[in-house]
Length: 418
Ligand SMILES: NC(=O)c1ccc[n+]([C@@H]2O[C@H](COP(=O)([O-])OP(=O)(O)OC[C@H]3O[C@@H](n4cnc5c(N)ncnc54)[C@H](O)[C@@H]3O)[C@@H](O)[C@H]2O)c1
Image (cartoon, rainbow, N blue to C red; front, top):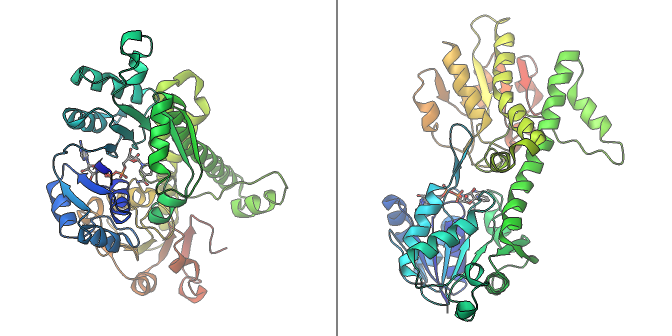
């Protein structure tokens, strides 16, 4: 069976490594974080994702999977390390570059290198260039197609296959989702297709690397722009004294209108970052995508102002915030607008803030440092609250008995208690 080396054992890399191992591939997982490597080798997942712990345990037990700090030779290398943005919203692909540099010394003729990280347009070509510099003995097809004497000495294959999984459903979607494969040339795309066909049930479409890179960014920008439209409607309705939820519900009765639900902002690791890659690559042309980012980033501050306006009418109120994750029924806290709201609220008031988040056992570090924030259970939070702020539409909150909040001041940012 082929040996696969996966760099980056996070939300994407660890489920993928474990899945491949139980399917019979020999898998080496690589992560720069020693604690993560140790945890995985003991048979545990450091990622909070349904059924992943059991899958990691099975993968390690099978003898097909082990984790380490450094890569070693393999048939297929998969890069699934973080891609980030700077404080000024510029692309930061230092981890991708570091992972490429760590991989290059171990490459041998016939290897396939797959980039699963989300990346700005043109990054796969940059990777080809870095590999070429580090390993002039190896040939990457696209770089040599114009040089007849080495055209037949194709030695390694390079492709970008962006991930589309949803936290909370990663194990199902890794297998079921359709895939886009961008090859640096056709043989690379076909080689990657051959690999994914061994464990993916969804359809597989082949294209070039720049198109594949942009498709991933477009998908998340599409979501961001549509959410921004709904959020802008909520600002407009608030100004005009109109119920935004009623507007959205009734406008959606139009056969060709499908407005999303407004909320307190946009979070998660991807949607908050990916549109900026497009804005950086085509700044003058991406005015809508840029504006959507600004609207969604504006929402947490707007919600904090609304909470403060409501609190000003109450005497020393206890404020209970429901939900911390970035979306319903999910444990993902990265870039969550709810966390930003609770944090900003605690900085601007000496009042006690109670937080209810059924998916965590302790406050995240960003909030744990504030003395006036306390994590409590739902019953305590609701009993003690003078002002209830619903930030996430978790199932546990949707079905809440109206008795629990009916007589309290309520700010429902998700429109579930209408
Ligand atoms: N999380 C998602 O739902 C999701 C969905 C689609 C795409 N993506 C993309 O996939 C990529 C990975 O995201 P993630 O959520 O798995 O990140 P993550 O932060 O959960 O995990 C990344 C892991 O990579 C490790 N790492 C960093 N540099 C490394 C290096 N040089 N070598 C080896 N390991 C290294 C980190 O220690 C970490 O454990 C990103 O580009 C992201 O945008 C993520």
